[in-house]
Amino acid sequence: MKLTKYAHACLVLEQHKQAIVIDPGNFSDDFEVPDNVLAVLITHQHADHCDPGKLRAIIGANPQATVYGLGEVTQVAGMAVSAVQAGDELDIGTFHIEFVGGAHATIHSGLEPVGNVGIVVNRDQLYYPGDSFTPPPRQMNYIAVPVAAPWLKISETVDFLRAAAPAHAFPTHDAILSAKGKSLVDRVVSNLLDDSDVYTRIKNGETIEL
Image (tube, rainbow, N blue to C red; front, side):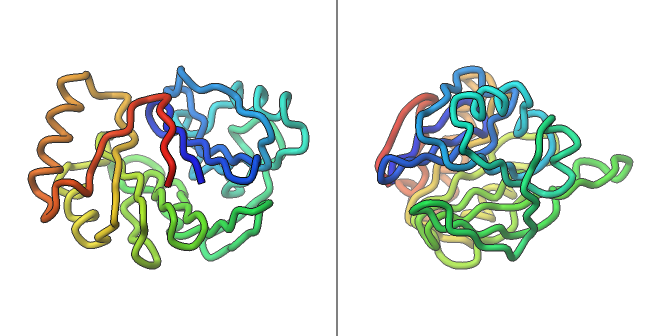
């Protein structure tokens, strides 16, 4: 399976000439609509993960694609969404998808809470928790880990990775950081893991083989 990381929290997965898009939000300015998209997976309703304009572009180029997300995502997506919830599993083409978690991390007690589902791909190949630190259901080969947000402390990122113990991890959710900020976060996280080689930054627009 190939993974392309775009700015902030958007990922594209490809295998057997089929593609899935995860969280095409409004901070992912470099996103390019791929061919042969079977599905768009949305972790939650916030605009940096769910941009109606990008969804229209994806579906316009791939009318066969289905958008999956929590029921509340429909309110902001501007189109029909196939509702999922934590605990659901789907086979989408050659991909196996699991949804876990259910709640967005707390930003502040004064804000209304929203839902969030983490996404597990191909059982242990990739885990992306969305805006949460919900533990993966099993040990993962790759974890896309959030590193910067109003709801996040870097100690939580480190503790999450220590507990999950993936073979590999790479940072996401970092569009609010400057280049110097990203370097600082990467250095702190790497230095606090037992194996600093686990955590590696993937450049925006870069494609890797998982």
